[in-house]
Image (cartoon, rainbow, N blue to C red; front, side):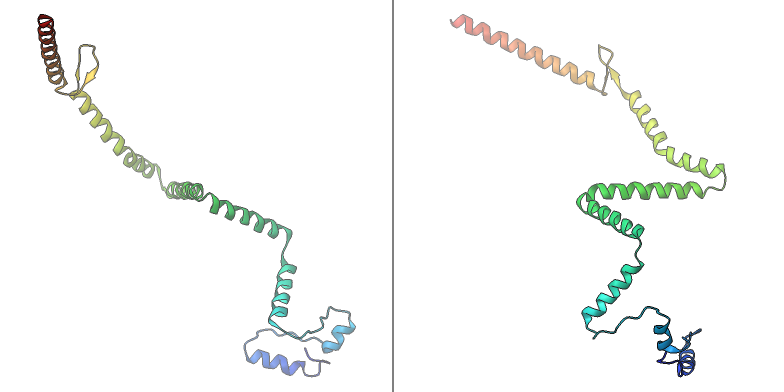
Length: 181
């Protein structure tokens, strides 16, 4: 665009040479633009502040109420994430784990893939069950029928012997005390 449209074609050719694919011409230039009543802004002396202000105005013209709502929700979520960071990390972990499981399940080609994953997940359960069965076979029962650890009968008999011995010593000491009195 020039003042009256007389030099616009030369400007358009120069723009094509520097890489602009489709430059547009305003017929009649700036004067016809003003005569048609189209928007014109009076240039002000440019400072850093005025340039930033114009950029901010341009951004705000394009912002919709839905975007403002989105920014508000995002700000609240960010504030919550900062204040409750442990909970936020837990939520992120749950989301990531859920996403990983979903992607894994979505990648199955047939039921055999699913069966293979279930078998792999159950290996620790199977081994744990075998270990519990082995340990249960090693348990002994006491007089009440309750399970006890191996060799606990030996320990129990030693404890009873020690108690009997202690009781015998206590009776001897009591007898000596009575005879002295």
